[in-house]
Image (cartoon, rainbow, N blue to C red; front, side, top):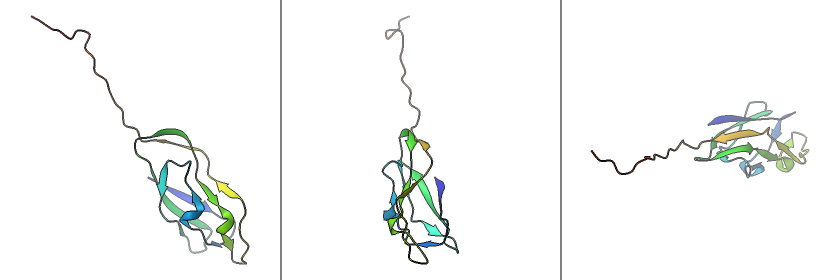
Length: 102
């Protein structure tokens, strides 16, 4: 798991799990919690088991997030790309001769 931080330019309200887009994330996120001044929200990301994907992002739909004056955000914010590799190694065992005799 890892901590995901959402930093806003000013205090905001209304950040809800339904505003966070995880369709390209390959994982799940806990409900974000705000610091005391509501500019930094954090959540815990848990990657999906048994995947290996190099291109992943987390996005926020800002339409439901507002500042203290009631101004709603617009558009979306997106994380940098990150990779998820939770696949376990596997092995194949082969014998060059399947009939061994004395």
